[in-house]
Length: 116
Length: 110
Image (cartoon, rainbow over the protein chains, first blue to last red):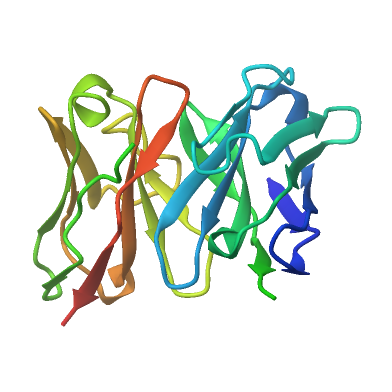
């Protein structure tokens, strides 16, 4: 199983970014997927979840209405569109594969920094 | 949804057994067997070590075990080793299409 995030970087408050995750080594279309983030020197926070078929989408209250999770099973790709970014969204964002409602396999993470 | 409560730090000596607690509410741990635990080394991605409250993924040492009683879940590490020095996080599915993590516990092996 390999998960590789990309698309992170520095963005100003109110700006947008789209994170991508390239999946390989497993049956991507058969797996639910998540985004989990970790602010610098802080704990883990679940961000979003999507079922294997693209349904069952849910987002944490802290990002509801600003972030959108999506996937393209034909390309083995997971995405996180992040709009109206805030300073408190600064974190490492992990792409994670599901196993029985647990966060089974993790990518290496992509750093998103929101600052003026 | 408030974070689950874990001790900020714990410590033990090599060979000892140690338990990390994770306290939630009836809305998460108290109503869900879907508790998981993660080990994280500095600068690395977390690793799943317990799922379903008590199950170990393939390749995880049987020195790690999980349990749940009421609104509290626990991770026990037996035969403590220096390589166990890391941060540990608990997590619970809330049953409302969301997950909540604990604040994390730093384990020191003295």
